[in-house]
Length: 211
Image 1 (tube, rainbow, N blue to C red):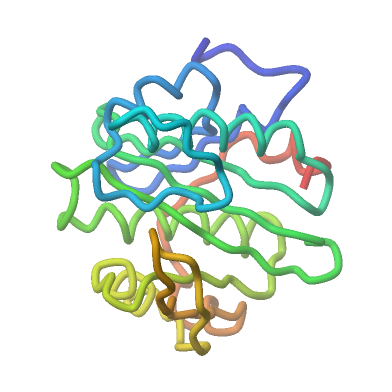
Image 2 (image 1 turned 180 degrees about the vertical axis):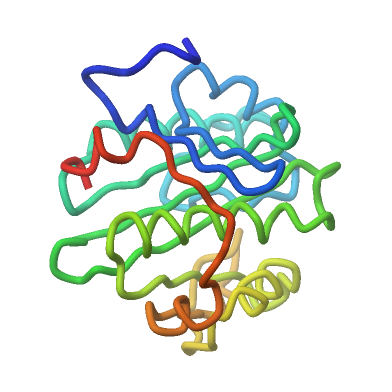
């Protein structure tokens, strides 16, 4: 239940705020609302199974992705998902993840927005929020991301936040193979571009040990 502290899984207490955009740690109670909001054009994790129910692939991925991230979480290797709220209305989902974070100090991001919330600067705000968590809160040195080379909106958000091109990588794309553009943002560039941002982080002190 929102508003009640999570004593045994304190990651669920995390809240990030910037302007009228609020990110709350994703919980099981959010899975159905996210599934109902998720637009048809969202790319799902190709490593998750397809259960063959027309129109339900994204919903299955949202549920199974959450359970996998919670069940496999360990210090240093984790996937922290956040529901995105705009003026109190559910708008989308933002993920921040890392592998061997203690040594590599590198994070990756992924996200999606409901169709009605696109083109309003929300994607940039929610990415800014998790980057603040990564760099300011957790001491990351590098943030990476990737997007299909035709995904101009995602690549545009990355460039607007200061990411630079970092090569391409082949991925399965439906029944074929396509290129994804890799992008990279360093701590130094983050500090140069985003000193004085308005992101606030709540609940990190109680769960820092889990990262």
